[in-house]
Length: 159
Image 1 (cartoon, rainbow, N blue to C red):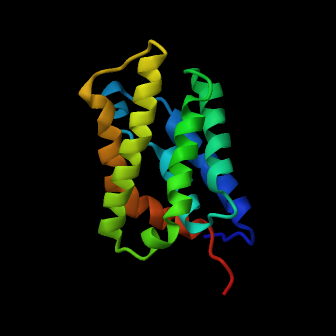
Image 2: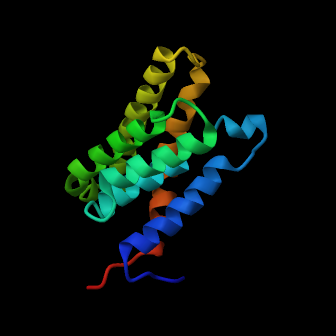
C-alpha cells in the first residue's frame, strides 16, 4: 500500500495499469465482458483530481490507445476527452452521491463514450453493429465500486 505525494504520479501508474488491462489478450468469451478499464480510470481521475488530470489526461490516454490498437486515429482520444469533460464538469455532484448512484452515473457516461465510438466507427466505414458492443458499459458500471476503491488506494491527498 504505497501512497504517492503527487496525484500525477498516481495517475500515471494507474493509467499504465489500466492500459495493460485493456490490451491484455483474453479468450473471446471473456473479451466481450471486459470493462473499459482505461475509460474507468480516466473518469475516476477526472472526478477525484480534475485539475491534475482532466480533459488532457483523457485526450493523451485516448491517443495512446488509438496508436496501439490501430482504429481511426483520434477516435478514443475524442471519446475519452468527452468522458473526462463530463467527469470534470460534474465532479462535485458525482462525489457527493452514494456508490450505487455513482454506478448509474458511470453507466450513463460509459454509454455516451461507447456511442461516440459507435458513431465514429460508422462514419469511417468500420461499423460494429452487434449488441455485444454495449456489454462493457454494463460491466464497467458494475465494477465501478471496486475500481474506485482500488484507485482510491493509489493516492491519498494530504489533509
